[in-house]
Structure formats: structure tokens, C-alpha cells
Length: 237
Image 1: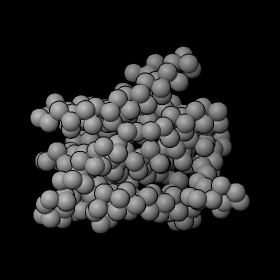
Image 2 (image 1 turned 30 degrees about the vertical axis):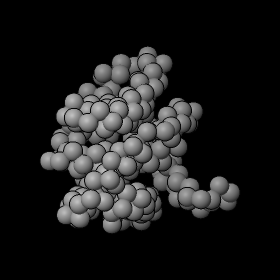
Image 3 (image 1 turned 60 degrees about the vertical axis):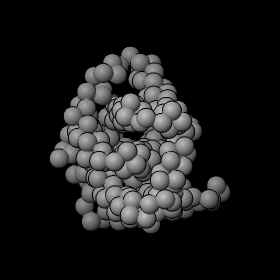
Image 4 (image 1 turned 90 degrees about the horizontal axis):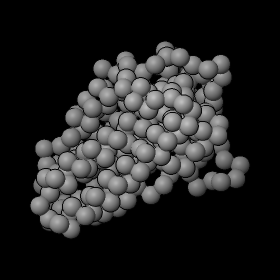
């Protein structure tokens, strides 16, 4: 399903992940020749943020409560701001943002459709969980692209204004144990779809057994952050 990522690769790239909570002599896990080319990286990252804006906008339109609409609008605005900032970087290099994003429109739209819930709370949880995991992952990838990567990292690390969404979900499950159980299952399902997207962003042809051992700490870190997000809402990962 996700065999749509480009395979062009500059000579040498290194992904680095610093252990959380350790800003000093942190253990770093280095990867060689795994990051996609810069056009692929920027195109994917830009379209992901645009997709989150679109999903949140759809939720706003379908939500009757004005306070809920306002909460969702803040998260939508943050996603749009990130999208526009990445697009601005693309334009600085004289590339066409539409051209860079176009290869990922169909597959990433399919990803969003697969993680779109029946109930508004499912879709809110989808945005919070999948955007959180993929922002973390693309932040990790950004270390491969020098100054441009640093600028993308700063964009992704900006406040996503999703705390209000977390509060809406938390309030809903506090009054409904059945919904709590359903969303806990939904959250676990989201992990598999999101990890597929993250793995597909790497040069998958390079993932032999030896390289796989190097990659696993990154995904272990993503899963740990996912568990913390779920716990903060009141759900079991």
C-alpha cells in the first residue's frame, strides 16, 4: 500500500535520536543511508500537516457546540501554520510545493481515511495520536538535512494546540466507560497504521536484519511517547 516513497538518496545521511530527558551525553542511535531525499522529506511533511488541517476542519463543520468548534479551530490553525511554514521553505529552494506534495496525496489521503473514526471522538484521538507520532518521527528525520532540517524541526516542535482536543476526549470518556474501552482499542489500532507510514518513509530496501536492529530504538521511542499520550488522556495504550 505504501510503496509510493521515492528512492533517490544523497551519498550519506545520518538520522540521530537523543534519549528523552538527557540533554548532555545522551546515547545516540545513528543510521546511515536511510533518510529519504530532501524533496521527499519536505513534500511528505508538508502534506501531512495539510491533511491534519483538513481533518480538523471537517470536525469543526460537523461539531454543533460552539466551544468545541473553537477548540478544534485552534488545533486546525496550528496545523495550517506548520504546513505554510514548510511550504515557505520549499519555495525558498525554488521548488514547487504542489509538485513535491503531489506524489503523496493519494496514499496519505488513504491513511487519513483509514484512521478516520465513526465518532468525532475517534477522529479527534486519531489526529492527536497520529500527528504526535509522525511529528516525533519527522523531527528525528530532520537531523539528516542540516540547516533545512533544523528549521523543519523547529516548525514541528511548535505548539500544536491539541490540548483542547485531549480535554474533549477526556471529558467524553469520563462519562462513558464503554466509549473509554472503544477508544482504548482504537488508539491501539492507530499505532499499526502510523508505524507503517513511518517505516515507509525510510529507504525500506535497506532494512535488512542488521539495519533493523538500528531502526528499532526509534520505533521503541515512538511507542513510548504514544503510551504517554494515551495515559495522559486516561486511556491504556
